[in-house]
Image 1: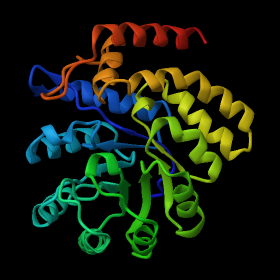
Image 2: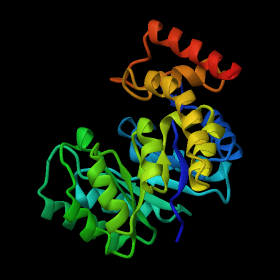
Image 3: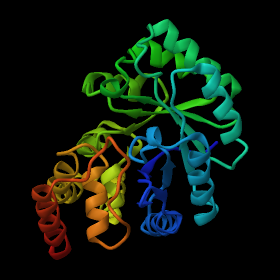
Length: 289
């Protein structure tokens, strides 16, 4: 099975007008892999998956796989209708994906027993590894330690994207479950790595990807002072990229670099002019650092 460590980048979905800009998507995927990203995630929340229909999501996945053959690509798989999610799972795993990034079903707020049944049902049907995605502020439900520890005993549930915001839970998951724990909040990358996490799924790693990769490698070699130095160089940019709803600020930055248009699908909005100005200044500062 694929190991889920290092820096994984949850790809934005570029648009030109209202259509997916596949040329920019593929160029971006190649650029990130060449910069050292361990893997890519297609159709996560950063990729505006909720604004893409099922055929569009599969077209995005196919384009990414074609652009970076041999590179690990994970696919986001979200929904609150289990039968529909199982149907999408069947279509997705006909492709050579490295794994599936799966959050709890949103809005309906199931019990912990309901969460366990949901994820075990998907894992039983899966032919590839599952990476659980604990993100209470998007789904409305928190996955508790005992739930995650129980799910970790399933052979195909191997990792967790950790957006739970609880460092005590993070430490217990790292030390007691055997799951590979990846930071899901970009500003928590260094602390998660220092606690023993395996890496991060970082939207901000679209930019200065090499610096993010260096942080992981430095922590692996015990060079915490150097890792901290690089992390604090990136932190102002990370904060700016999440000052307004993701991926608006990120797409603004990518547009400034000439990599794509900054369009989003409603109801998401483009970054405000004031924030764009700050992001532009920070990108210039990083170029000179």
